Length: 110
Image 1 (cartoon, rainbow, N blue to C red):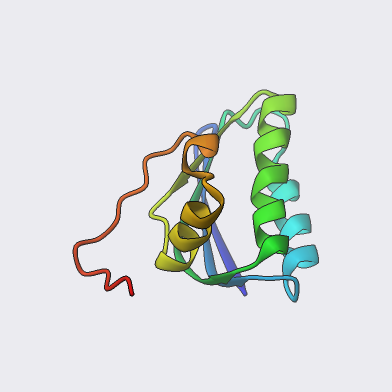
Image 2 (cartoon, helix red, strand yellow):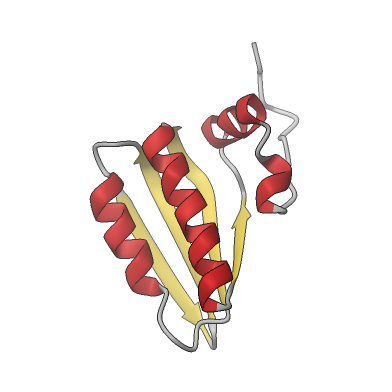
């Protein structure tokens, strides 16, 4: 699991690569919560490179949503991967996070 971050003023854009599963949940949680510092106005999570997500990864996204509300910053999820879209559709969570989900025309859903 790799996380790349780029800061632009009070906005932090984070790209999560590989998987968001129980095997990486603790280190990913520590990394992402570490970014939630005072002065942060917006946290943007690029999910395009997430290859797999399980309930632990989903719990982490839910935790970040709660932290954003509690600490007063905006959380944006964007460029959802197919793995993330499948879980969001299965659990009907697309509207919960409030970000548009774009399904690529090349996606071959079975």
